[in-house]
Amino acid sequence: MNVLLVHAHPNPRSFNAALRDTAIRTLGQAGHSLLLSDLYAMRFNPVLSLEELMGEPQEVEGEMEKVRRVDLLLFLFPMWWYGMPAIMKGWIDRVFAYGFAHDEEHSFENGLLKGKKALLCLTTGTRAAYYQEAPERNLMRVLEPIHYGIFAYCGMEVLPPFIAYGPAEMSEAERRATLEAFRVYLQGLPELKPLRFSHDSL
Image (cartoon, rainbow, N blue to C red; front, side):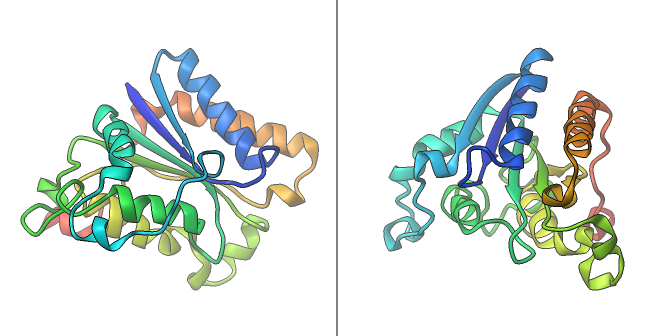
């Protein structure tokens, strides 16, 4: 399988970077072909220009070519303000362009990125209990605009996310255990069942 890792964290020593390195090592050892877009290291410009909005995406053609070549897109990021970092949202704004990832005639089951899969790996600022205390904090609900509004809309199969809750509050042993859990999760990729959305049965 061909995999594109899209990573967004400004600190190269962050836990997100450790998750990225775990993914590279695990997927590489399993024989998958890997591409990496490390957005902060690339100094990726997240601002969509008028020219791109009008259909001239030359500056991101290389990123589009990466998407064309892969079967799975793995997004690794910290959850900030209940969403992805601006640099990653900008990558999606620019790379998932009209005519490439979507248009008026292609969406969901016949989306332009049909046949590809998407997987989120994210970290949060605090422990899981916080997100379980109120329905508004349920991360599957919070992530729905990404899962449904971006990936499913463009025709992709959406795999269940891997969420590392509160690594800043973890002990070193807990961090190691979380990285091991992610390694096992990635080893089980072929068995992961895509998320289902209401439009699937329409």
